[in-house]
Length: 269
Length: 301
Image (cartoon, rainbow over all chains, first blue to last red; front, side):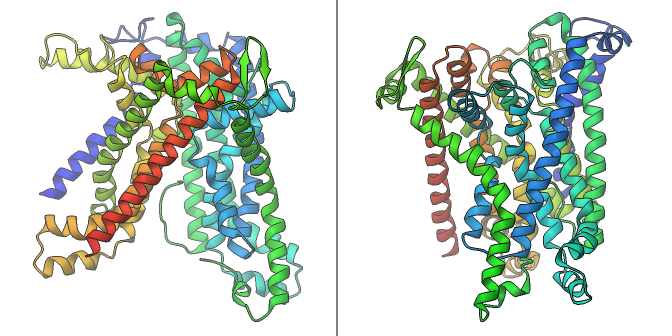
């Protein structure tokens, strides 16, 4: 009995979680400039409009570039931290590891304003996509570390030792043994960091200057009611795109766990 | 933990030394990055919060004037108190709604399907944050989805107005945004519970409810605490949700910090408000952890 009520609750909760996403395509294909029920009929006009806005295209390019660089850098930093954490013991290990994870719980506005002050006030750098990347790498690295931790910690160190005993150098054994085993984790970390950066608004708003990212562009458009249907169309594409990326990331994460023979603890966080 | 066996070889100090070197060398890039772009900027914010600004010039003589203003100006005080109240409310609502889900997935979902459930729960969290928040405005609005469907079904005559452009809307939207952050830590804690302990409690005469209260809940507490902190702390820094759905009465301290930095161009005051907000949140979080320790101690007796 209790089980059934919990099941009903779980479904209702999923509905609550998915409500905004489910509404999005409804309004994206709705032939009315007002975002409200009742729906007025089917149109693809808003999707066609998307192809004509050059400011949007620039924002998409900026965001793609930023997300790509961020994903690479935070995965590389994540490899360093996860490998160091899994393989070596060194002084002040847990405070250092904890410190690297701090951006995970720090309010994003704090990261945004403190970087803004450092860059503008102290270093005198002008804001650009590069400054957004600096901020995004900071907040994406903890996610990469936690995904890669699972990969590196489930590695059997005996495999690597065996390779070294059989005449491989530490680097070649890392490349031949460790890297293939953690590749699914790497891909998963790359995709998650990409998704976070591509969608991040709060930090980008402070640090993007005159090169708006996609979310900063969307924020600007939300003020204009006549732009909203186009934004709904854009959102529909973005949601589809993120679901695709996340599904691929999840497949690789599971494959990585299966390859390492570990139990699935579920989730990215 | 999956440490390398050599790490345990305390009898070989020379070995340990090169191992420590390797480890430090490897951890250096992420550590230096975090020191330069996290610790240093936070330090600078702290220093700037003691400066003052008149017009366009920044006076670098240290002063407590900003802090005095932050605590005495009724506007700042109101925003800070409201932000902490909203963050607390959001946290409470999110964690209370999340617990049964975590419990359901951990105790009632077949092991082979748990990963799928967790995946389903996390997907909405990763999809366009701004548009999600905006859609809550569409759902909760005067002619919104909720009101028009409730009216169509005949539950209400007039549209409900208490759900948009106020604190309630902020709470609903943030509870939605932070849901997976609350569910996952609780789920992990529940998964770690040895289920035979609960059976033992039932065998020894506890009812299902009292076994839940005396065994499951105390053992799940670390997850609840983690969920509480991971929702409470970042909530204070959100300015998008209050701006889009909060209306004039739902603005929070983060909106003021943003305004000070980007509109009013008063960096010292913005820095002060950021520090005050962060320290208040940290103190409340510490107090919460301390209270929870006491609760767990009394539960053990």
